[in-house]
Length: 334
Image (cartoon, rainbow, N blue to C red; front, side):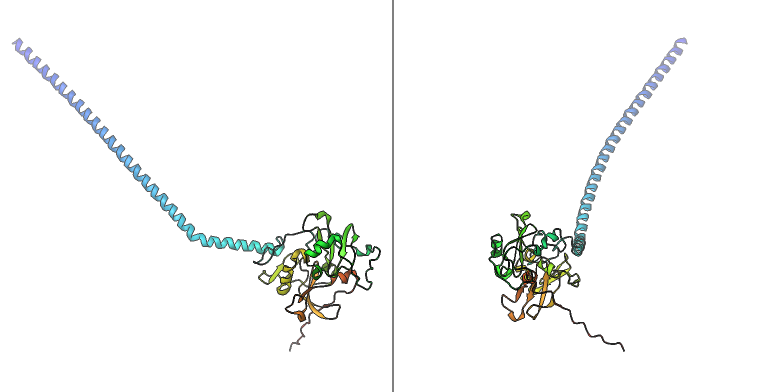
């Protein structure tokens, strides 16, 4: 009886041991399965994440490409307005510069010559007193004093002969009516239409020989009305430096015969003047001279002439005789 009981207990223990072993094996299997599932899920998640990142990169590239294309398209659409705005700003700057005189000749047209700015080319520039030579201090030997009848003529001095011949000779300067003389430390010589002066401080430049500012000296006490500003155009040129304009025949002559260097800036508009011979002509004054219109010589090289201001000043032959414009007759109000 005792042996039977022991066998029963042994078998029971064996079954319990087998049950525990099976339970342990099942747990291990579940752990392995769970580990496999987790690994597969992680790999799938990583693959999906990579796919999502690739898709995001493609989307970003498309967005960037679309943005650049849109910016280029917007720039093309806005280009005309931008160009128009820049042109408008440039025009405003040009008009301001022209009105203030900060840039000489800034408004011009093809055919106009933009001469380089040289010394003594402005109305009230430095050294003007030195340019207005005191003739009364110069009367050497056989030089006729100011106001004496004449003119006696002289050879063109060696100092000025080359310049005289190269710049129009008798047609532009007239005959010499004085010898070379020293005035205010400079060598000068008077001509019927001009006064040539040596400026040694500008030696070896185009300004070593200059014409005297006879137009300014002759009209020193003559008031000329200002011209209203206008934009230069072919045949009409406005000079902001002095506030006057030159046009048509006078402008063509001015440009073809030395321009700014020879005549300087205009200091009047066209006016009518009674000349020493008693005839009334349309004239215009410049810093260095006077241009005259002679209609009886129309269509000839002498239709436009340079006035005899050298004789007027050196020999005191004449004074300005400007004809005032006729004022309209007042009409009484009813």
